Structures are given as C-alpha cells and as structure tokens.
Image (tube, rainbow, N blue to C red; front, side, top):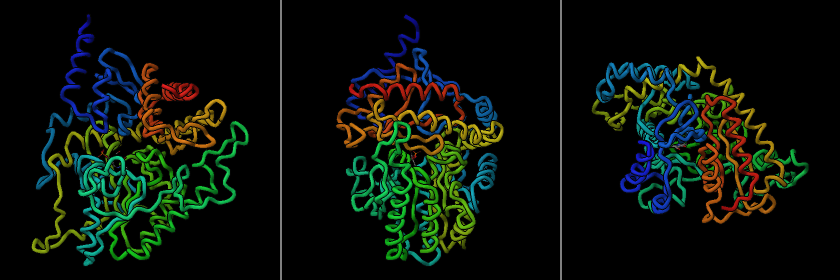
Length: 486
Ligand SMILES: Cc1ncc(COP(=O)(O)O)c(C=O)c1O
C-alpha cells in the first residue's frame, strides 16, 4: 500500500467526521466515497490517488488562468516577503492602493472608488449599504428599498439573501430577511404565467435537426419577454421610486438561477429606467466579471453613449484569478462624496471586515490582471466561446439528445437544461437528481462539473487550452447522448 492509498481513506474519514460542506446534503455526502483534491496544475485537478480531472467549474466560477500559474504564485511569494496582511482600518498598503487604481482604470464609466471586502456576498452587502447611505446623506432617507430580479442569486449573507430570495434555500430564514420587490427576469425557458408569448414563437417547433431554435435564442420571444420585464420594472418604479434606493441586477447572465441570459440591450434599458426614475443601479458582476462573458465586465456588452456604467459594481470570484478571497465594491466619486463630511455629520460608511484588502490577495489580483494583457486572454475567450457554441450545436438534434431542452451561453458561461422530453419539457423528478448523477458519471471520464437543479453548468477556466476545452465538450456531449437513468 502506498502512502497516498493510506492517506485517502483517513482524510475522507476525517472529512466525514468534521467538515460541514456548503450547499451539501450531509447525510448523503457521508454515505458516499469522497473525492479529495490534493493538487492542481493548469486546467487540471488531481485527487489524492493521483487521478486527473478537468476543472470544469473553474473551482466554483473563480479560477481564470488555471492553477499554479507561475506569475501569480511569484507575486504572492514576493508579497509574503513584505507582509501577508495588515489592516485597512486606519492604514493603507501598497498592493491595495495599486489594485484600486487598476480597477478604477479598467472598470467602465466613472467608477473610481474601491471598497474592499472578502466575498461576493460581502461585496453586495457593501453595495446595499452604500445605496441606502447615499440617499440618506442626500436628504432622502425614505429611499431605502430595493428592486431585484426573480431568480437572482447574490450570496448568502442576510442582505444578499434578501435581494436574491430563493424559496428552496431561504424559506427557513424568512424572519431574518427584509422585504424586496422582485420583477421577472427575461427567462425564456420559464416565462411568468402572466406573460403571453408572441404568436411568432418558434421555440418548440422542430424544423431540421440542426436548425432547432432553443427558447433562449428565439428573438421574438426574448424581445417580447424583455419588454414585459421592463414594463413591470417601470410600473413599480413609477409608483415606488420615492422609496427605492436601487435596482440590483446580475448583468447579462443570472448565473446561479441556471444561466438565464438577458437579450442584448437589456442591462442598458434597466439602467435607463433607473436613471429616469432617479434610483441607483447596482450591477453584481461577482460571477460575470473578469472575462467570463467575453468582455472584461458584462455591463460592457451594453455600453453606448447613453449607458457607460452602473452606479455601483460588485466584484469578487475572478478578481484574484481564483487564488484568494477578495472582493471589491466600486462606485463613483459622486456616491463616495456623499459619505464625506465633518465628523459630527456622521457620514462615515461604518462597515469593514478584518481581512479587507488583504495584501496577498491584492498582489494575486494585480498579477492576474497583468496576465489578461500578457496572454491576450479576452481574445482567447472569444475563440473558446465560438468553439463551445459550435460544438453544442450538436445538441439541437432531438433524436440523439431528446432530454436537452435549452442551451444558454454567454461567453464561457453555459447552462444546458435537461427535462424528460423536448416536447413536453416536463421536469425530471427532483429526487432522481438526474443532472447531479450525470455529473458524477463524468468523473471517471476525468471531468468535474456541477449542475444547478437539472441544468448542467459548463464553466471552463477562461485560459483553458482549446484541446482541453474540446475534451471537456466531448465528455459532456457524449454523456448527454446516453439514457439519463442512474
Ligand atoms: C452573482 C453572484 N453574486 C454573489 C455571489 C456570492 O459570492 P460568494 O460566494 O463569494 O459570497 C455569487 C456566488 O456564486 C454570485 O454568483
């Protein structure tokens, strides 16, 4: 027996005894053998038995350049030679200053002031407090409510749960969260029952195997649905703008909702309504930022003369290339100025975390941002996104892939929705955990991906070499052609 043979069972056993995993049914977890990831390199993860897997979830949507990237490793080592962490409460640090200046340069519009924290959820909490504080300091304290989109996910702290309410996850915590008004998101696969689809809808008609139109790409349907959602938003703002601090959106793609994509121009039109009714726009770019959708920031897809940037942008996940926990809430000078005054005016933003602006994390982030330029990463992402779109065209064939009912893609974020059959779109019995079992079945083939409900999520590492990407797609497409019974 080798050292690693003996290490695996004992680590798995200790895990079962002591670790409470996030979003994990623990009873079932403890009944199964577990994969213990011991090391990684480039796009690959290796378990304690030395088996290799493609990291098809970008280590929960955060890894950007791959694992053990020499430049990021070195930047962290160099920073360690200075100091690992010092506080930003009352002190400054070189990497946090340099990173803030870089973020101000690369984010769109006049976003210029960076408030650090350490997770996507905390970036969102900060944004909510900024919005409410801003209106308070502007003499409009009644503007303290939020509008969000149904299905949105913004994290698991109390405020972020409130604006991303999900019955399955949050019902238990109802008494802890504050009321938020939700408007529908343009989810063409599951439109609200009150929405009447346009007569030209083609989404469920099969023409030819390879010209099948997924619901999410049916232009007549998505345009009409987007207009319906915007009308709902406007109806609400017309009546409630006087008590609304901000509209919060995951721009371009609602990730955790199952990759629900918005048609081009949707973010801009939401921004226009926010401006028209004098409420702030908060863009949660935690998942979509740093190249995932093909632009550095997702809002940039909708940039034009009338829309430059949201008022507040939340960043996390990919900010350090997926190396260390760091988040940033970035806003305009105008909003930050509202928090400046004499001491007795008490305008300070009373919020902070111990590891805010951690020096190692900021150093990793600076190195990661350099690599975007050095490696022309956005161009690589464009090419990879085209490969994905091209390869997933195969899934349009209803005879070979009868369980695939929608494929949604923006850049490198992909959701493949499964159901019992394409015609009825009847969901699988949730107890069957069809997509979860399908993902488990891909592990022996060397691929790790995670579903969201019955949506397979593909989230390749942005810098993933294209031969590895093709292997990942081969594995997924092949698995989808089998009978989905486990
Ligand atoms: C859009 C969005 N916002 C916020 C979060 C929360 O980020 P974190 O898990 O770092 O708190 C997530 C996590 O998936 C997310 O997708």
